[in-house]
Length: 158
Image (cartoon, rainbow, N blue to C red; front, side, top):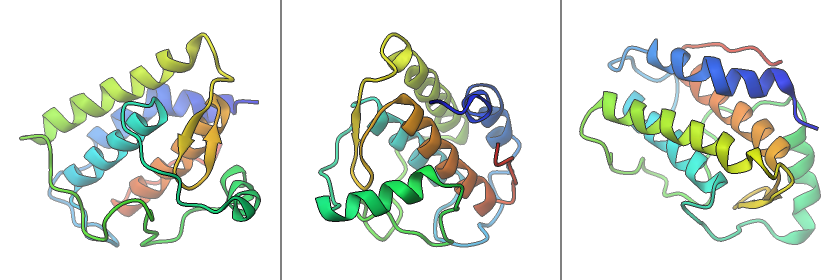
């Protein structure tokens, strides 16, 4: 069942929160700039709607433990690395921060339209396995909360 508070945060509050971050602020941890983080989050929204695919990285026997973490309110640790991404930040794809924000907003909106008629549809998260809409909402909220905190913005748990 979808957490409505998290869904509403992603739909209505996330983009304005990201827009409040000064693009020159230094991260509390990690190597990404604000624009790299915005592009990274946008890419993960694209994963949730099958625009981008990465192979699964989690062995089947470990999925229950990983899914337990996903569905909990435990936060990602600082410097958590996605095993399907390189250790260094990806090169920026957008020429400006505004272009990156526009792309992120489009991908967030696409996420909601993608699952609108079939919230039980599943797409592959490389670490957490096949996720439906409610599970992706949980993941995206946990993921963006982590990156907002990385750049000094606290968001509600919900």
